[in-house]
Length: 221
Image (tube, rainbow, N blue to C red; front, side):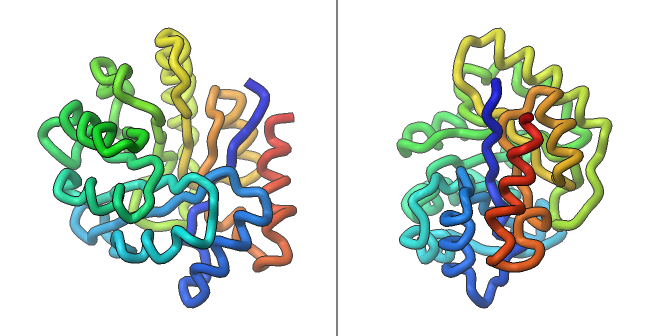
């Protein structure tokens, strides 16, 4: 593993210019576009819905990495798939039947992801590894950007890397929360291959996006 993928979180973008921001981070070298969907119920914040995802779709040719922090998630899977999501990630706690939810996402022709909160053990994935295309480790408590990275999650990343390698499947191992050039290196060394970054990408405005993304990718050596 030598390449590090960067998925900028538009939660840190200028929402008054969201289409332009997505185009700018695409031009700056983003590998995916991370879209945080929050409902004010599962997490203490409210962000965007399928219509915004649909409106942003023409502004980038990169995969839309949609993280659903909503409960229940199942009633909205089709709407986000139709809006242009490429990867739809859900939390095990967001519904009673994780396997069924992953089946639904895949039946819609999308890649399926599972998100683990800081207190969620990696064993939650033990019986669905064959259904997963992406695993997202939250290195903060979900709901707000700008939080400090939780080092306790590095052990979980290492354990998940072993689980993924044992499957022989290509499963992205993504980390979200408090990512900067230093924590990016820690995550990469622990086995992550994809990083979500908000503040670290968007700080300084569009003239700095390319250098900010490059600084994170440099964590891979």
